[in-house]
Length: 112
Image (tube, rainbow, N blue to C red; front, side):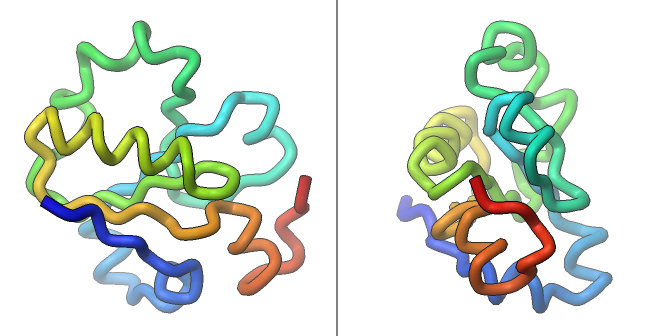
């Protein structure tokens, strides 16, 4: 199964209904989230994998559309691969990550 590269522009243009029915995961580290964040993303830092990995199915619905974000798109791609191996069926990797979001969509989100 291919993991869709999802543009920051598409994220910005999601309807309220889509936002309400989709789930959003940010895999960046806490210090990165402190610098910049996008509302609605739940933080699952990859360095804390042991703390949250066992409960992934209790926290997220494997059949819902899931958008995964990091700084530039590499760690989120890794997370998408892992989620796919856990049975998640509709994954979207946020292309360019929060850096692209800040640059192309919302310059009020700090770049780092």
